[in-house]
Length: 105
Image 1: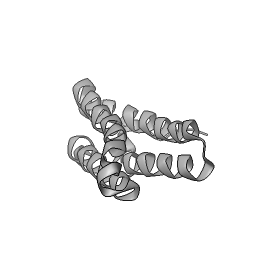
Image 2 (image 1 turned 180 degrees about the vertical axis):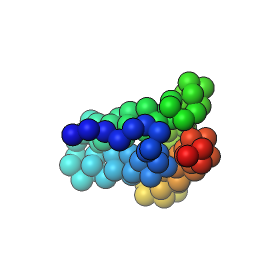
Image 3 (image 1 turned 120 degrees about the vertical axis):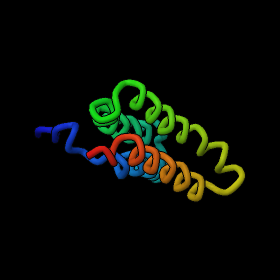
Image 4 (image 1 turned 180 degrees about the horizontal axis):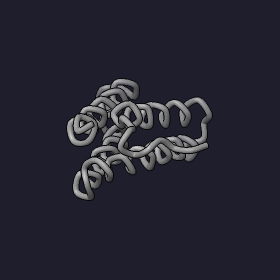
């Protein structure tokens, strides 16, 4: 399997799916580290495009939003519920990915 060129990848859906997919896998399997694998794989795949399109600073900022969203979802879930929290941070990460990297395509 060959990966698409980093410049040809749209990362907003990958970031959103990494957060949502990681949550779903962890919840449904009961194995939290397995959800982390999904989260990490999506983050790494998006990250190579963030680096190619937005440079080191942009990639670092987007990685911080992505991983910060993961952490924030745990805190936010206590206030608004798990699904609303995950969907909120996924939307924020997707919007940031589009604004910083994807719209440059």
